[in-house]
Image (cartoon, rainbow, N blue to C red; front, side, top):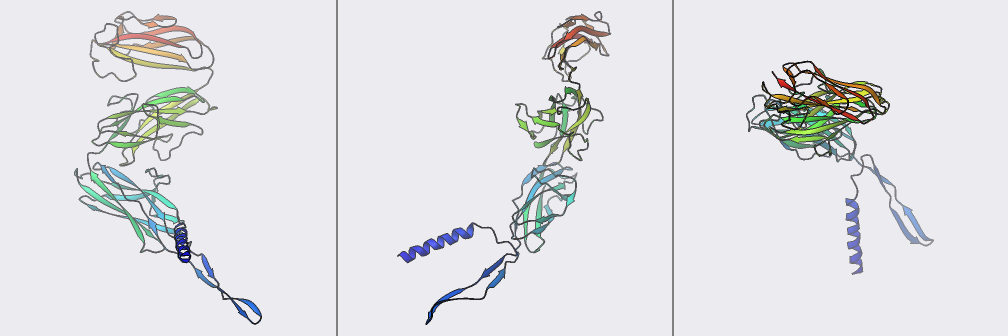
Length: 436
């Protein structure tokens, strides 16, 4: 019984030990030498055998996770994230290849490195292999493929991505991705409001900044962005910022930070937008302390990690001297019957409904001293826009100082002589116009 128990315990220990270690590295030498003891007329003797050596040979092995399934629009591209793990016992280089079949054929399948595994190519340099990969290491990459422009909705493609050992070409692993053609997502990135009339609406990046925010070194300023999905499929869009409008590189000036937040104030790096819907995102931009006064162009991009569909918007940040900085914010609201009262809350969004000849618009302008010293002799001025005249249904007014405005029905400008503003203090000027 005792012998039996010892054997079982020994076997269990051996099984545990064997499962606890990775494959022995290639090139490892295993040495063995036997020893015998015996007794003769002179006493107990020990004798050793010769030593034999076994060198562990390399064995190729690899794994790839299962592929995924996605939908994309005809004429767009689709991106699939992949990885290769070297489970062999030596360094190996794995060649990357693909085949695709199905009711549609995808063209131009290209692999790109994706070191952090976020599903977005690190750069625009195509690759055909993992490069040398140590035993136990993982290489991450993406496969990007184009769908034919005329592909019919509902047609499918099966993309097989394969990695083949350079040490032993008979050892391979594969992942299978399935693409179904659907009415794809289309993204339009706008500022402050959603829709076709919003600043930045339309494809491509603007030549000039759609808005410029003023701040001081070390002080955050924010941009309100809307992701408008005008396509037929939901999609998730990665959020990016750069001073390079082409996004060939994603760089910011030294020390600058950009943080994206959702409508609830949570920090995000992407946003999912339903078909035909929009999502509000805030980009918080902070130039570091010591930043010299000046204006910096910034570009924001929303790009699908699935199809690569993207849009960019051009913004700018002006860093002003900290001792004197005034911020002016103008908002508007419709006054359809010209009774002097705004019909809606004031906002900086375009007015597209109800703005007909004979209707009125109410304006509010808020000037705030964002600096650290008192400013003197402040005057706020706003010119009556073209195709409108001054409306006195609610006379022009200012919270501080005195107001000067044209006679009712005339043009010109409205100005408020404010005087001094302490740091953090604001003044509001308001007036109305009537559409000709």
